[in-house]
Image 1 (cartoon, rainbow, N blue to C red):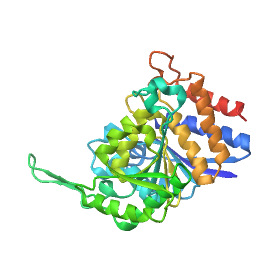
Image 2 (tube, rainbow, N blue to C red; image 1 turned 180 degrees about the horizontal axis):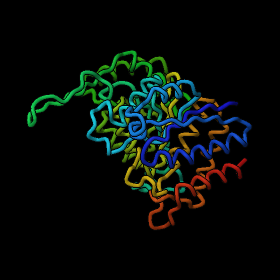
Image 3 (cartoon, one colour; image 1 turned 90 degrees about the horizontal axis):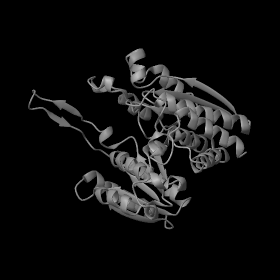
Length: 359
């Protein structure tokens, strides 16, 4: 199969972790007889520096013409004082909209070898396997109007949370379809006691649930869900929620399983899938060679699974990562006092070697 990919290294540690993900993809392509075709394009702060645009037209064109997009990270504090449309994050939001990627899948899976990395007791976190399904193109991140206006000292900021029934229906269907392939449980997270958006959300999700009688549907307020995610993470299977709540809860889930550096994501539902680690650009450690590339490598596995239906290849990557961690390989975020930290490149090399050994 031809794997035609656009690679967006982005900002901070993005290029470092993406390089390792591409190395693993190349290994998979070689071992399974696929052809890897890559084009590299700028986004975020890197694109602002090069073209004064966080998402240049050439980048959009390349992404839309590819089979999938692998993104490193977006964000650079050097542009924090820019107007909103000229900040790195604006490029990412525009890219999601251009691709029509409304469904963000964020798995949080506990690796047995990392029991000492979780802040929770082993008996609490053991066997955690959560799929957070986050609506990605609505809510306060995209709602209009939005503004900061007024005289200095008396300014007023406005953001609008907005959802239509069709937007809720389509993301709910993704969650229910995934649940049918897992434990047949969906927990819909909202704030229906105070937000009209959440009341509509709960009503529509409840109606959609009747189309899936085999799936057990529950509802939880987001504050209560955050508490339960720490108290009883193994109770969760598929978590369905809106844009901002999903952003927050998925980072919390990263802490539960040991590190944000382990979390991958897939943004799907539109023309082309977008795959990226959850961790962000981490400018404080950029260029030091200490970032954890596993989130990016696991995102590459999701890319193979969701954009190319290559399940064996995806499992090969995930199994290799589990094996490498079981042997004691740790980047700085995972090392603690019990292990010696290895570099970003060394972790990538060990995953490549483990893929080869297991095939």
